[in-house]
Amino acid sequence: MQPVPKASELKKGEVVDIHGAPYIVKQLEAKSPSSRGASTLYKIRFSNLLTGQKRDESLKGDDMLSPADCQKIAVQFSYMDGSHYVFMNTEDYSQYTLASENLEGQLEYIHEGLEGITALLVEGSIAAIELPQSVVLAIVETSPAIKGASASARTKPATLSTGLVVQVPEYIEQGESIKVNTTNGKYMARAG
Figure 1 (cartoon, rainbow, N blue to C red):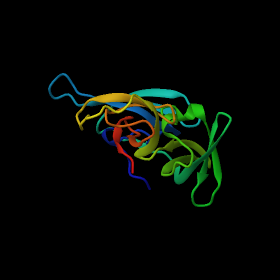
Figure 2: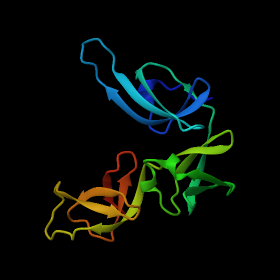
Figure 3: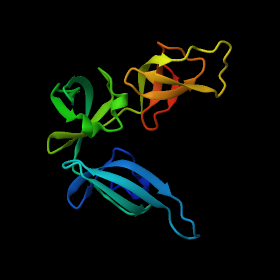
């Protein structure tokens, strides 16, 4: 049995049960109280995995939520079929299809052969995916590297192979691959 998550421990992509329906955490933000003695509030946007309906909740840190009855499996992104993304179970090679609108905020990180993805299955069908912590993407467009640019904090925008634009250090060149954090969309390091 999964541990019961508290509101303060919720993470983006986690699935909880609200009134018998599975909801995935889409966005969360902690609101610190303005008065002394008041507790931190967590503003959470959930999305119903079966209907796609959005639901906003404000919860206290120690509010308990029920874990949803869903199965997590390891998948790899295989290919696109129209506006649908096809993922393959890395153990038994079965395939699952997810419409691009269910991947809002994640599409910019998905590329062919991407591994380390966790699929959330509800009643046997894929409802959502969790991306790996970071992905490696190639830079397709950025201004030329500045000669003598050190590892200073100065950055420039770079467009990656998936269309995602991230700020990279000035010394990074077009054609290089970089590691990007999938939680905040920030540059982490040069890749290999």
